[in-house]
Length: 468
Image (cartoon, one colour):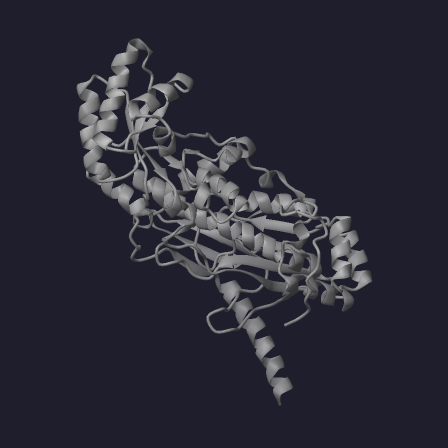
């Protein structure tokens, strides 16, 4: 193991939040030790790093690229505070290196696939070109943000597809892995087609519609369920009322009783089913509501739902108007991680590759071309950045010399509209929940394959010479 710091008192007592002042330290130690070694060795030529996923999880036919905006915001603001610099000095980093960090600004260029674009294994989602220490230092943060949000957007796309046009609301905040994940997840879900979130901060920060119902504790806090309903609608007359605290069918009947009490003043928008056989209960609830003339009262379902259960309810014709999805989507329970990597592919104008078994990389800065076939088929071609290949180029320049370009300042609505459009354009077999057979085709251009072989020969020849 390299380096290390002694246990010590925190620089800022009680500080536990990531912000622009300390974000440089949200990194693995080796990023800083390598940066110092590059700096001390005079290795500051331009480097290109490529971020990609080596393979898709078995449960995914495609991924939905997400997380670019927070990455670009981080790169624009990257500058360590005095407290961070003091921490690094006290941790044993060379004083002159820390002085170099004091003037640090990200000065590189970034090419990226726009958020909301379906992507596949082996394709660069993002490429960073910058002086080597800068490009290395940002690795951990870039991976952290793109990985999480791509995982969650990809899961949410499946959930919204299963819902078949019925609204989906994100209920996952309370079981997500921390505050940043909870906030960024709501953003990723919205891009992927989720209609609203219960997360109030996400509404404040991103302008995402915020929706909610009521908890069982509110009903329990009153002497009886009907009294709880009366009290709640006095403050929130258009509410969706949770009806399964005690007995679901009786809960629906209490909504009917409330409607008779309030007469023309009754404005309840829906009832929420949160347990039991949701399909059977929805049919019984619909019959009770319709029998009382409450046709406009909608039925909303929640309670441990995932895309498979939602699809089953939809296919069986359950009279459910919308779904609240929490833990399964919030942590992408079936595929919570991706084999995502950020690898050096060029330094000082020369291609670089990794030859580890199962972890080979493609050298140089690249472009991905999406080729649509006349019969609805499609495939992608990974090529060198300066190649002219038939098809639609996916990677666009979003940052130059550390400053975002217009393509790097897209609105959330633009990304959401792109996701809907691009997913619809995928071959039908890829939009199913089941594994596609065959999967999506991704080819390497002849010129890129030739460059890969040339770089690999250069490395193996040099290694062979040293061994002899």
